[in-house]
Image (cartoon, rainbow, N blue to C red; front, side, top):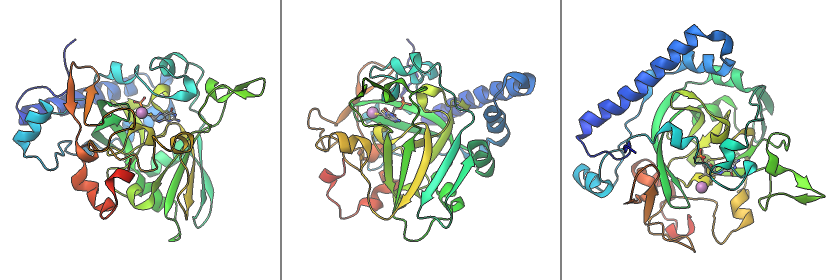
Length: 333
Ligand SMILES: Nc1nc2c(c(=O)[nH]1)N[C@H]1C(S)=C(S)[C@@H](COP(=O)(O)O)O[C@H]1N2
Ligand SMILES: [Mo]
């Protein structure tokens, strides 16, 4: 298979290629939107209408390395993983444990209608239809590295809005210090959430829950994504809305969110509750802090042969390192 990842080429040229690829895909998508409205979901129309093409940020964040060094270390430049791979190699335990389960077992998934319930430390708790929310937000496209705690990685072109825009919209009180997310609980759509004769099918406690410190949530890199590759999210990738925090391991990026809660103290997240020795609240990507069962110093690039070195904070240290000043890196896994 042709490698679309970390291609060896001139940086300027590749930036152009990447952005042209995405631009062409988006154009096809927009054309489709105009021609076949009848088959389109409301969300697709909305994405087509509101996508802000001027907001692609530079994906080349190499902290601590010169550009030449970064090229040498990673063997090239960021190129999105093939869409076909990103939508068929997934972790979504509500649909099963193997990488092919989410795509295969999500055929009954329904993302409309979808409401988001907002509670906790806000001036007034509320519930909002997802389409109404998206219409109020500014959608952007961002190409980010994606690093799973299992030591594999991809590069994903997301579409979403900045979480800080949502936080402002929600009128959060100054007492709020954390933001917690929950995945929708509905065993008719998520088979592994169910039980047989009173025994849960999964070892993971559902609904899946995740949280961030509020200052982490307000970093401009942090997104609530509603699409990728110029299209709405597929069920297996967390439709209709999921969290994207590119400097953290994938398990922080909770999918299919229907509840958001603002809290005064740090909540337990699902993996932390399930296995606190192996998964923490922070989940920061750090090549110098090993998982108890494997090294995190390098990663297997999905869709390409071989491994590349893992970057501190997944390459986004310049943007977020200040959040963790004075804290022990060994405790931020
Ligand atoms: N609700 C929910 N969200 C989840 C998961 C999950 O099992 N359930 N898996 C997490 C993990 S471990 C990873 S690596 C990413 C995978 O996202 P992707 O399949 O879109 O690549 O989703 C995260 N979000
Ligand atoms: Mo993961």
